[in-house]
Image 1 (cartoon, rainbow, N blue to C red):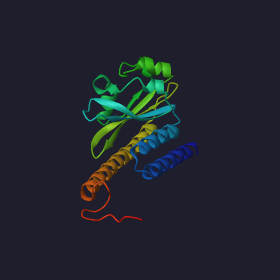
Image 2 (tube, rainbow, N blue to C red):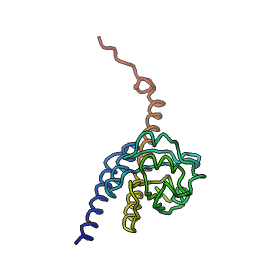
Image 3 (cartoon, one colour):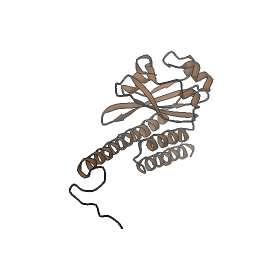
Image 4 (cartoon, rainbow, N blue to C red):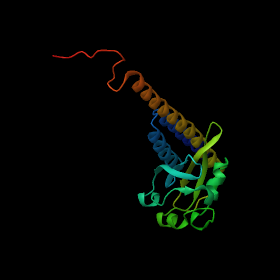
Length: 199
């Protein structure tokens, strides 16, 4: 019975995540909802989403849940110096039992100060390419089981596609605005039209 309830809670959480993600096309909203939903569903302390910079060298924090501003100010993650993220960006899920003492983690002292212990990191993959990573953190030692990893992978997959859709929508909206400015001019009137003066 316990296993059935456990599975049902994951299905309910996955449905809630999917519902949240399709209800907005604003990239910031998509990212923040994804971080919150993942943390709550897995009952972990915190979650971050980091998206690859255009040069592919840095992962910048794009959304977070449960982390202090001080921790986030430590800066971006340098992919070259972060084995965890390099592995995740190759399409693998990575789990660390204790980030405070694992050489694969880039900021162990800051993590210790923040009270972070275990980590699960999965890739955000859209249209066959990695666009970033999703991390969840616990406040005590924890070994993530196969079901939890599979669940976070599923959330990350939904999220990555939603992020790309939101980005595409934003680009199309900007292109439309630019096109309308060119066609109609800055005053919003079609070319050659005469403005009617109101007395």
